[in-house]
Amino acid sequence: MKTLFRHPGIGGLLFAQSQVAFNDNATKLALIGLVQILLPKDTAAVIVSVIALLLVSPFVILAPLSGWLADRFPKRHVLSASLWLQLAVMLLLIGAALFQYLPLAVG
Image (cartoon, rainbow, N blue to C red; front, side):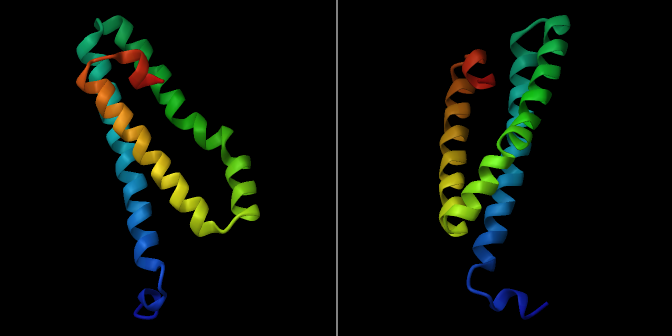
């Protein structure tokens, strides 16, 4: 296990994976909470189901594209760009939640 952390990029990679897991779970909790606050219970149940589907769909839809990008470009650049994009999306989600604008938050 000591040799694992001797590689120069392993600390950054572990931090990036932790950030992705945190952002994924924070998004789920924020969106579901926002829907339950803003909508009536019967409508909220349907929207929560749609949100669950929308949160899984990028993994299925974008998997071929991410594989192609990782093969075509350096993995370090692909990971860095995807983390910056994820940060931008999280900031957009926070802004939508602050203004309680549900269509932007779900989008």
